[in-house]
Each structure stands twice: as structure tokens, then as C-alpha cells.
Image (cartoon, rainbow, N blue to C red):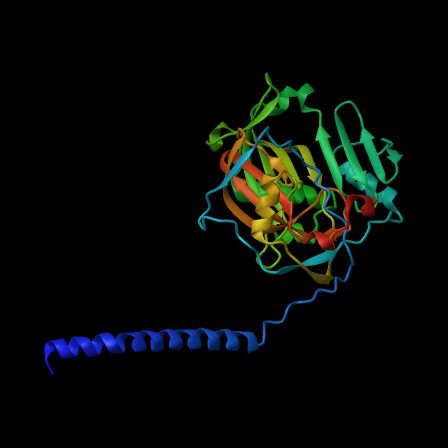
Length: 352
């Protein structure tokens, strides 16, 4: 066969080859589509919420959005992160007034220095002890309390202070809470954070110090343990609502502020509810539907460096313990977006 004859044969066969290849591709695509259509789809999880529609979270710490905020995300993943498809919701029993609370109140008041003759004022479930130098507020339904010393009128408290080692600091804080008979087991099983502060009498402010030797005050924050892979996040994020603030002297210590606001959940009541996607939570944050709990030093340009799901630990009673998306940014920015899908949450008017 000459070169001309070979070239002629190839030209005549080319259309047939191209047509055959095209038909093969079409057949392959059609068969793939058929197999895909016949393949059983992954079963869709149908949620039958144990509590029906739940009450929305009430955030006690709220900071206004800045004018015309511009959010960007610059985390390791480079995009919003979606948590698992669901998370458990826990029922929190409503605290009720306890029989014999007067004796418990007297015990707590004595522990912070009130005399046995001091009377308290009772409004609803809140008992208040107060004199010119200190105040103790106790919820008689669960003995959550807030204690404040009027240290502004006692500046000598901050003279000649010492700072013990961290183990002793924690032990003294626990000792105080046990004296108050309010050291919940969940807090005992969780983590603690020691913050070293310096009180400035002229400005009446507490400032965090880098060098422990500069401190004259210590704050101990107490956090409950994680629930599975989810951390517990407080109303202000960076500081717990459960704390003891102390001043140490060569002979003993003085508690100047303390608070326990803890609500025990029913672990056995755990019921799965579907979560929003990370993309949806991110859009809600950008569109003003989040709750900023720490604005830091940010302007209207806010860069998010970390995003995850945690359980919101309220400092006021709420009937359900539930998750939120947490957004952390530069300069101590923190914001929350409720994580449960909206169709499983009551509207505001429904929860009233």
C-alpha cells in the first residue's frame, strides 16, 4: 500500500472511529447515570424531637454590632466549619425553694463574715444580706450566690499582699467554696484558670498583669468539663460566671468577690437535635443574627480565626442546655450563634 492509499483509507475510516468513540462515551455516561439512579440513597435522619420545639437561648451578655461590620474568616481550614449533623439537648430542671433554707443561708452568711444577728431581705427566691462593707445575694432555690466586698472603701486590703503558688491558690478557692457549701460536682470535675491582676486604687480598676510579681489580686475561674468533643462556653467567653477573687496576706486570705451561678442538667434526658451547617451559622453572624459577647479592640473589620461548636453555660436559669457556634477573632473578639436548626426552636413570641 502506497502512502497515498494509506492516507485515503485513514480519512475514510476517521468518521467511523470518531462516531464509535462518541457512542461509547454516550453509552458510558448513560450507564453511569442509570447506576446512580438505581443505587439506594443514604437514609435521611428523621428527628422526632423529644422536647418538641425548645426555647431559644437567652444570652445575658450582649454587645452591639459595630456600624457596617465586615467579617472575614481566616482559620486553618480557610472556610466555615460544619459540626456533626446533630448534638444532644439536655433538660435542666427548674430549681424550687428548699425546705430549711434559712439555716443554709445563715451558714453561708457566716462564712463571709456576717454576724449571726444580721437579717436578710427576701424578694422572690433571692435573699440579700447587706451592710456597709459587703453584700451577699443567694438564690434559695439552688443556693447560687454572688458576694461582693466593698473594697473601694478599704484600700488597705491591697497593702502587703503576697502571691502563693498556683496549687495553693486553687486549694484556698476550693476551701472557700466548700465553706459556702456551694462547690458543684461538675465544677469540681472541670478545669480552672488562674488570672493574676493588679488593682489600681486611683482608677478603681483591675488589670491583668504579665508578671506574677506585679499582681496583688488573684481570680480563679471555674469551668465545667467538656461534653464529649464539645467544650462548655460561658456568657462572657473569656471569663467564667463561676469565680473567686482573692487577696492573700502572709497570714491568710480575703475573698473580695465570688460567684457561683451553676444549673445542673439531667444527663439522662439527652436527646438529639439537628444542627445548622457551619456555612449557615457564618452567614447569620455576618447578617447580624449572632450575639457578640466580647468586642475586644475591634473596629468594624473583624477577622475570625477560629470557629467551633460548644455548649452555652448560662448564668440565668434556662430549661434547656444547648449548643452554639463559637466565633473567635483578633483582639479578643468572641460571638455566638445558636446551633440548633431554627425549625426546632420556638419563635420569641412562642416562648413567652
